[in-house]
Structure formats: structure tokens, C-alpha cells
Length: 536
Image (cartoon, rainbow, N blue to C red; front, top):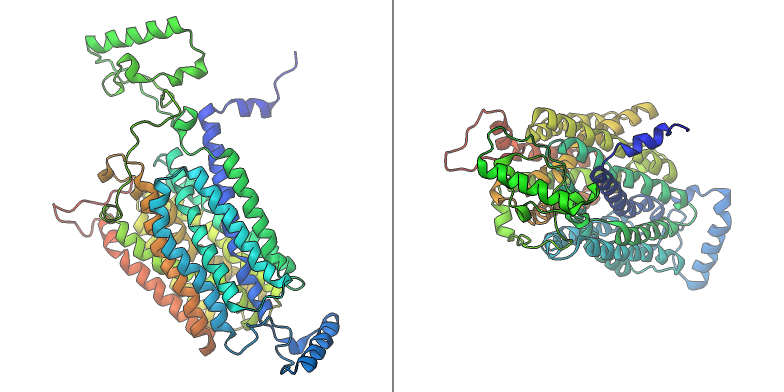
């Protein structure tokens, strides 16, 4: 008889519950990767919407002649510098117009996020995510269709950005809630640090897809990501499991039988064993028995249980959703929300303006600038994982965030101050900036949000997680909206001024966490009547 292959033995070593948890983690990772993949093209396509056309190559010569003839026939002014730019972004105020596209999306996202958390608590996560992904895919593709139908109306693109910003708010609170349902606090920083790399992976894939078509047919830079995110919406509808109880399993808990069982507990345990032997249950079905059915108290008896036992697919006596004001009163929510506002301001400024900065300041072409910008997201993956590991090890979330924010400011200064650092220097600085800028952002939006959403003051109310996540990310999205807008307004006066603005934002983010940092380091003690923030 042949031996069982090692791979099969390895797969068989996982329990049913572990398989479900791994599947949910991977699926939610892919779902939010698709969300971010569809946000990235606008930053890549900016350099194609407004170009320096006086350096047109031989391949573009025919297009140049065609535009010249059209301008003569229609009696329109013709410029050698902007003939290949996309109207209405061919004007001198193109930076403000491109900034308006960013601001319209991010402002709608920030406003919609507060409502999204409240709505998401009251609806099925699976249905809510599916609707959001299908809608986002539609609006992303519609932006690209403007190229194929020669749409030059600024209002059209602004409307698409606002609509897309609103429907994209369905994503983050839903996936964080889903992951929070499946994983406890033990190694939440590490798990969510790795899981949160979906943001950077989505940005990288979105950049590469958009850069592939940006120089030839920028409309496809939006249509292809739109199709991908819509397809993932269908996958979400078919496969997403919202809660362990939906498949009648849960987090593994192992307890030894206590030696101090009283006579009543012993009697109940014997009754349970007798009843189980009569029913002849399959081992996989034993976890469906409810402890209350046989009157066993796990708190008093310490019985060994390998599953969270549930009787049906319906989650009866579900906790009620908490109010917006009650969520704000959870210790730490306000501080981390405001800190994320400034951290996200920095991160999203890089997200939307880095390719154009590299194209204009470092004189790379649109494709190479888009490819190089992905290194910032590579650094974001490293920073997110490091922040999670360090915060799990030290048990100090605020201190971890504060340290990285403190290191980010001088790194940004070096990046902006050195004029000729060469390609290798740019690569190192992009990865370093990405790690230090996105590390705190990743930690706050994942592990910290999940910690606060399951805070002890909520008495186990799992419904609070969606609202808390939406409040934190919604406040952060205000900064995400302001950052690219300010960059568009400040950049005409020099890119160095944009970096000064980013350094000031990092300083504010650090100061807002200072009270929590001092409390974690036991330098400052709260009053007796003040609820202490407990993150683990």
C-alpha cells in the first residue's frame, strides 16, 4: 500500500475551523486588493491627461498632424506643448483640475464612510460587499469609457469620481468586521499586518495594469480594473462567510477538566456523556451541540471544547447596533481617528501624486514613473508587517505608531532635499518612505480598529466593530481628501513645499498620539474615574 503524499498529510493536519479561517482571510485579502486596484489608475493616467507634447516621437507624428488639421478646420488655437493632452486638462490650471478629481473621490469617500458603518451593521456583509464591488467596477469602467467616446466634460469625470467614492465605502468596514469575527486578539497585529498588505498589493497591481496602457490607450487603464473588481464582487457573493457561526464552527478553545468539580457539575458531565453516546453523533457534528442543551457550564466545569457550539445557522439574540456617539466614547477612538487623518493625508498624497512627481521632478516617462511608484507600496507592505509584529511583541500600539511617525519626517526631508540621488537612491528612499508612512496607517486601520471595536466597555457587542472601523477610517479619509487637494494647490510653488506640508502632517499625527504613548509607557497616569485604554 502506497504511503500518503506529504502534501496531503500536511493539508489533513488542518482542522475544519482552521481551513475556514484561512479561506476567509485569503478571500477578504483578494476582495480589498481589488478595491485598491481600481483606485490607483487615476494617479498613473494623470501624466497622460496632461503631457509636454513638444517632445512627441515619430510614432505620434501622424496624430500630431491630425490634431493640427482639426484645429485649423475648427478655428481652434493650437499649441505644440499641449496638443496631445486630454481636454479639459490641457489648460495651465491642470494641476488644480486633476486635484479636483482626487478631492471629489476622497471627499465622497470620507463622507460616505460614516454612513457606511451604520448601514453595514444592519445589512448582510456579503450582500453589502457584493453591491459595492459591482457598483465600483461599473463606475471605474465608465471613467475609462470617456476616452473611447471622447468625453471632454469635466463634470462627467467629477460625477464618476463622487459616485465611485461613495460605493467604495462599502469595502473597508465590511472586510475588517469579517476578519475580526474570525480572529481573536492574540496575534492580531501580525495577522492583520500581513493581511493589510492587500492595500499595497492592490496599488502595485493597479499601477502595473494602468502603466501598461497609459501611453497608448489610457481608457483601458480604467476598464480592465473595473472588470476585475466587478468579477471579485461575484466571487464575494458566492463564497464569503461572514461569521464562524454561519458554518457552525468557531475559534478553538481548549480547557482541561478542573479537579475542583462539584457534585452537580460531575452529574451534568456524566449526563452529557451519556446523551452523546446514545445519539451516536459523527465527530464532525459534535460541535453542533449547544452546551446549554445539556446544562453544562464551561466556566465552572472547565470542560474541553474544540469548537464554539451552535445549533442553527440563524444567529439568534444578535446584539443591537451601537450609536455613533457611543462609539466615539470608546477610549482611544478619537485620538486614533484624528491621528489617522494626518497619517492618511501623507499616504494618499503619495498614492495620487507620486507618479507625477517622479515624471516631472526626476524626468521619467509615464510608464517608468508608474512602475517606480510601486516601490512605495512595497515599502508599505514591509512597514505594515513590521508595525504589526512590533506592536504584538511590545503590546504598545500607540508607541509603535508614534515611533514610525517620528522617523518618517526626517526621511521625507532627505527625499525632497537631495536633488541627484540616482536610481538606486530613489529606490531605497521610496521603500523607506513607504514603510514609515504606511506602517502606522496600516496598524491603525486594522489591529487598532479591531481592538477598539471589541473593547471591554462594549461588553462583547460585536456589532460595534463595523461602526468603530467606519469612524476611524472615515476620519482618516478626510485627511486622504485634503492631502491630494493641498498637493495640487501647493505644487505650482515647488515640490519641496509639498514635502514640508507632509512633514507637518506627520508631526501632528505624532502629537495626537502623545497622551496614549505616555500612558502606555506609564509616564502619565489617568484619573481614577477615567476608563483606561486597553488594547490587548
